[in-house]
Amino acid sequence: MENISQLATKIREETAYPDILVISRLFLPKEAVIGEYIYNRCLQDPKRVIVLTASCAGDTVFDQGQQFPVYRWPNPKYWLGSFLGSYLQPLFNLICSFGLAIKLYFRYHYRYIEWGHGYEFPALLLLSYILPISFFIYLHGNDFACALRNPLWRSLFKLTLSRAEGIVCNSSSTQDYLRNTFRLQTPTHVIQPMVRPEKFGLASNGKNLDELGDRLRQAYNIPKKAIVILSVGRLVKQKSFERVIENLPLLLTIGIDVHYILCGQGACESELKSLAERLRVDKRVHFAGYVAQPELASYYAACDIFAMLTLPTTKANCIEGFGIAYLEASYFGKPVIASRHPSVIDVVHHDENGILVNPKSGYEVLQAFKQLCQDEQLREKLGRQGKELAKRKSLHRSLYKNEWVREERQ
Image (cartoon, rainbow, N blue to C red; front, top):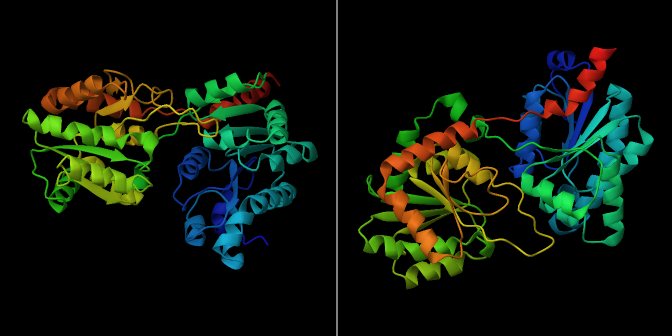
């Protein structure tokens, strides 16, 4: 049942005394925002962590190249089929994470568990009663909302949070939602995602970003001097991609040679294409579809402005946690146009690395696009400052500062 991927003997010896078990159903090489977040956390303390996660395509080769041991439970889709396997996956995750965590305890005698998300949290609650460990639980947004749908689930979730050593939120908006939902004495910490250059293949082969950007423009027949606006995300109503398309005719009217590239797939794709045709800008709106992470560098390099005008949602089961795409755009030195949305203000600072607008105000949105399209120096300034902001890191080892204080006193 284990399907365990292990490291070479030399690396196992170097991590002979890890004391933190990191558990996540999402982990690399599977592309997922939570998986990337957890992986970056593990890289900070490779000699302290053991990873327990679900199997995915390509995991054996990936795991063998890591500085920490990785253990995986099998994916039921492989032997139950896609439909039935997907239906049973949450139960399978809960049972396997619980059972293997106990087994790994007898091997490593770890002292801490870091539970990488709010999904399948009852396994963590049971482990906290059975094992002599302390634990931290991470909350990202929608994983938190899933636990609130059922009254019994909500009560168990609150109990889990109250027993935690600490709660890690990926943004201040998630932290605020947590505080407004539960009154807890448990310490909360905001540790935001970071950009890992290797994700885009930048660190290993020294890609020339200018060349990548020029090639992408050529592939879409976009002139070198044209202004390129980029969006990256699921093509859903909440992202308001139509607001960008609606502004293209207005920008063209005042003499701005502008193109718009959308990276992503979603239910609104046909609607957005119809809008572009109706406004006669379909030759300037380019739907890239799904773009794998290594190729995204070309798109960020090719654009002049990154824009995503997320609308606030009233759905209780949908919480916007952290806008990772805004952070990535800033990392590549691109100015951002974004909504004044709680999930955005952590990463987009008005007049510092971008411009925040009311997405429902046509005037504000147009003025922001007009200002950045016409002012190259402002674009460079905001992009440069954004790059500095994106390089700032908050470390997970800060969770254990109380442990260091106790050790110093002993």
